[in-house]
Image 1 (cartoon, rainbow, N blue to C red):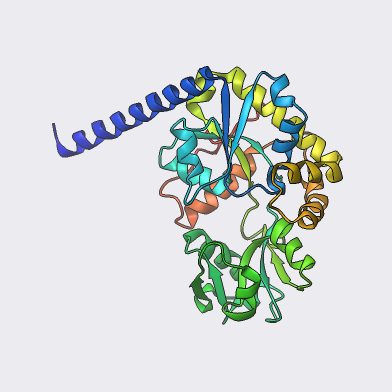
Image 2 (cartoon, rainbow, N blue to C red):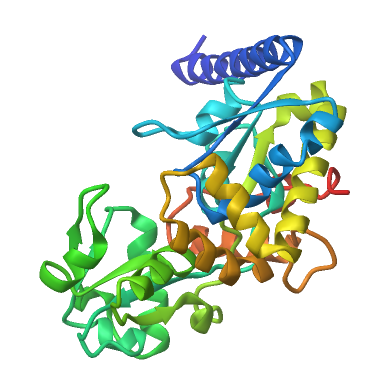
Length: 330
């Protein structure tokens, strides 16, 4: 057999083994009666609907014993879900897209937010549009997508990303301190970090991505994911979990004050005022421009996947239709 033949056989064997492992762990966990959800970040208002469903007993009513796992250091949510160590996880469209291109069998089953709520924040640096990023220090995490997004936004304004100085910042450091001292702008999620700045009396200048969706397509972040293996093996479990979760987010959308208190009950380490203000801001965005929570559109997945390919972020064209499903939404 040729070297290329061996490589193809090895790749096929690895894929088969991954599927077997997925089914084995999913079956073992399901047999134990416990459904595991892996978060991508510490509990916050992106996750409120999950905790509402827990608190209201809606998972239990669906016959599910759900355990929510907070991330450890360098937790790869999609790898955890694909391997069957968790039934479900929280991720984002760009990660699902990259993973699927690499053959990782994960599927998005609900969009938690309908639109990207992130932006690029600065403090007293005269940054009002993406053109103003020129000549500034961007504090990021070294991901190729950061440069590609800045490039798209800046090109729309006739500016060049080549005139931005990229600085890698450490995880867990206070961004507001960095913005005052070591960098000029950084990428934040307004619904949490932007609200936190308001509470600390810091006036941020924010260039929102939503103002540049004609240059960088809108995409879903975060999303609820599961594995192809679990969908094939136990679609009723997937339907029950997604249905109870949707009920939690629908309730949180209608009752932000109560939902905030529920989140604080399960995540008391959070600043209560931050949770309450963030929930008030985010609740209307759980079901925005769609008839029901979780709805995903092919054009959103396809447009951003095409953009990632055109910008060299994925190695081949993306099969958007296989990356998500609305089948399990109530």
